[in-house]
Length: 235
Length: 140
Image 1 (cartoon, rainbow over the protein chains, first blue to last red):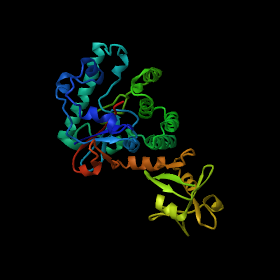
Image 2 (cartoon, chains in turn orange, yellow):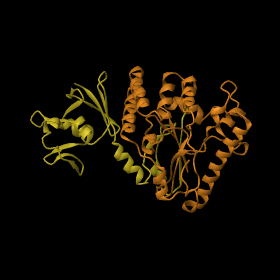
Image 3 (tube, rainbow over the protein chains, first blue to last red):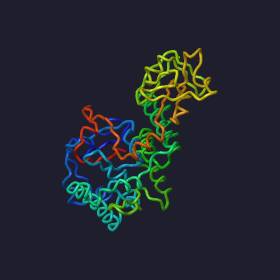
Image 4 (cartoon, one colour):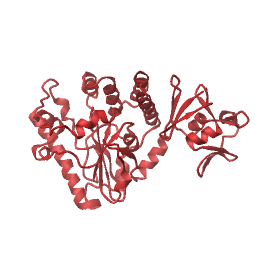
């Protein structure tokens, strides 16, 4: 079972065309490269039949300590987390793309698709083998890889949540003060940063501010490298 | 003063609240209605859990002959994050980091209930007995 959760304070209006497009979209090669979807996977794209939920308050991000999208958690039949929050097959290749043409070097695109395919293959292995899969981590390893929120993180969330409430009451200007404070308190949260930007101006979340923030990471990853098999530490 | 108190994700309009800097004084009735907390001889209680009022600090928590309780002081005692907007008189109380961390480290997937595009509500717990890939995304 897949459950997708959209972290979108803009609600239905922001996500409906992505979940149920008016017509099947043929995504351009550049976008597939950026997302790391190779032909054998992307050609199977269809309107989702699984629950696509809308999380205007970013509640799931708080519960699972997620700071970016796409982030995934694997949960077994007993409701136990067998992989903690981690990038769901996404990689940093997009950082090399030309901001005008959206093209990226072929080798980088190929590596992104390899990363995505490895993740999907691991997922399929778990679906087939359950907890016996090498990709279903032991309880000890899940805890080792997992990080709970710190006091500043929950204060950031409280600011974001107050901002979200004011936004829905129609007080966007006042809400932005709390979104900004959330961003300041938890600068590693791309969810807070990009949501704030997008509410300021549609498209801003992928605009110059975003690229400047990515650039400022320097050698640090945007998507931390994931060690898929158990028994190893994440990179 | 009319104040909106958001506690446990639930907003409540509370009449007769008093704001004093970072302190929010509520009547005991409003406290119970908006948050579930009650003032009892053993301290502030929520269901079966009671938190003693720290000795010597009673004035921080209770005033007006025991008829008003400072919800913000209780939140500070419990390390809950509190944020308030004085323009619109809204107070938000979140969960303590230790509460969230303990829940995560139990490895039991925290439950949630959210709407789909049609407004139909779905809970993670509806899918117990199946493997779940919980995956986040965003339009932005």
